[in-house]
Amino acid sequence: MPRALIVHAHPEPDSFCTAQMHAARGALQAQGYEVEVSDLYALGWHAALDRHDVTHAVQAPFKPQAEQQRAAQAGTFAPELQAELDKLRRAEVLVFSFPLWWFSLPALLKGWVDRVFAMGEVYGAGRGTYDQGVFRGRRALLLLTTGGPEAAYGPGGRNGELLTLLQHVHHGMLWFCGYTVLAPVVGYAPARQSPEARAAQLQAVVQAFGALESRPVLYG
Image (cartoon, rainbow, N blue to C red):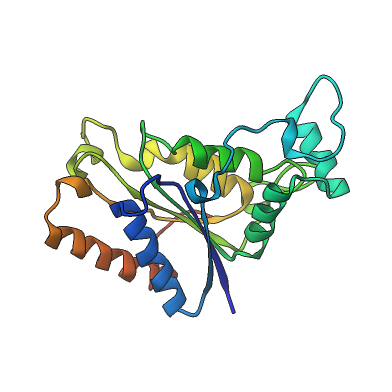
């Protein structure tokens, strides 16, 4: 059975962003995926990469990448971090589910990347990057909501083109580690939409995640 991991970062369980996550999970399950969800707020996830990410005695001065490599070699990642690494290794599809805050990822989700995309595990120490990355052959995509309407993120939009805003995630995080990066699934300004429009967007999420094989590829 194929597996997927959804890393979700929204503080409100009844938010539309969370509803999108549930719609995506259901669509993946209907396709035969076993889906794991890391709900970072529910987990009480600690965003900051620090010396507590490892259980071995760290050297001074503290060098995060060096300590990640030591932990990768010795199996000394902290238990909550090791659990996320195990989920990541199992997943053939990775989904980041989040609201677009300040044109980027919420702090908890960025902190998940800082800690879980560990040197010596998902890159570095002789591992390749991009088309030779650890996760080559696997797929990743973003599932997000925005505060502004779709026109604000299109060509000439005042907020900037969405794919340009997200390039640091698509290119610098996902493709860097070898993922084939699919086009994002976006719920534009759900707080400003009618109930009918929100229902239609949730159906669009179901359709998108039910047809990943035909979704446009951005990188990979």
